[in-house]
Image 1 (tube, rainbow, N blue to C red):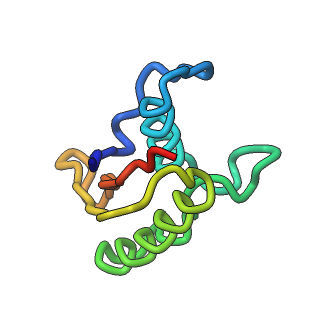
Image 2: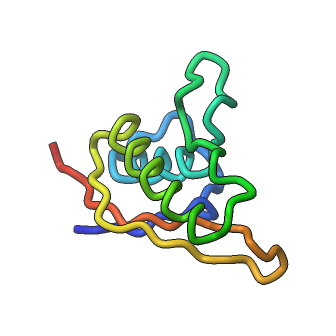
Length: 106
């Protein structure tokens, strides 16, 4: 079964998440909304900000690769199926990543 997760989905973080499915979904939302280098003891956690100030088409390509790598590394219970981007009309050029993942039951 596939699930669609967006960086905008991050609400009410539960650090003691007991449900495996919700834990994976929450972890992916955290990965998508964390800038690489911003977590003190895990500087490689999150998404690189190298795409910042690039043309949207270039930024999307750069972010796709980085998002896929970050999820593979930090949330191995999920496999990326697709990555899409939406915009924000109030902030032109802002990309909001949405990831479709398949969650492994093992």
